[in-house]
Length: 118
Image (cartoon, rainbow, N blue to C red):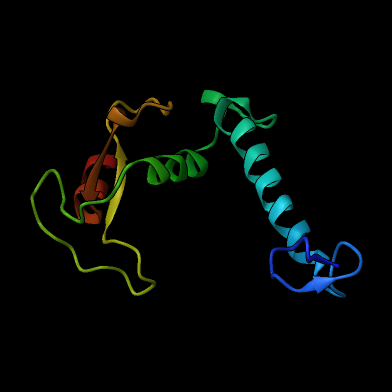
């Protein structure tokens, strides 16, 4: 008799106790997925568009990489968060050229953002 290969410690005749092989496979699968995702993220991903990305996706990219403070950088107000739970601020493009540069975006309240856009 040996112990179950899934790590539960049960004594078994074969390699796994009945129904326990999924535990081992799931842990191996999640490690393989994490490794694949690390190898295919950012510029290494086959669908990476670089600076040819559209407006919405570029703002999502900025939101994932910069943390919101909740304070407008222009007027200093702290707007009330929106009803859906999002912060009351927007990411505003400074230069007007939509490119992947985090320094090209600043956090503004919606009123200041609309005043700048025109």
